[in-house]
Length: 212
Image (tube, rainbow, N blue to C red):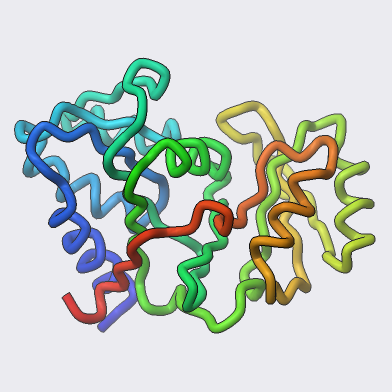
């Protein structure tokens, strides 16, 4: 099975969690794009969606799927999103598409977080994929120095501006044995908006497309 087929099958499998009349939180990325296509087939069954990025919002609207602001909806029953890495405890690294802040907000506001990935995203220990960190632009160098003191190698993703108007540092050379502790530690660094570790709010369900 190709990675693309794994993404498509995982996205299709997530549809079993979509119920009639539901407001669905929708993430960002290539696997989620398959989920949006599948969701379009049942767009008349759902009330609408809350989107984590301008990219996903555009695709949803092309399909004629309503997109609502989270402030207007309140808590969500379901959030479906992908990941760049997933360990056996369902802890994730996300943010390769620079949408990590809105993704983390919607995940926090959702009762059930279903993560859809192809099997290549499964790892024993997080950190092979560089950890994205969204930072306030004026704090980029300050945050980079603080991360370097923790043993990471931060690299500015030059030319990338998030939907929130911020910048991304990709942190290399991390072997993340305790994702919860590292997320908490990074959250204390002034100037960091969001860390691409989803450990304090990890996935509830992970679908790989391998057995669906």
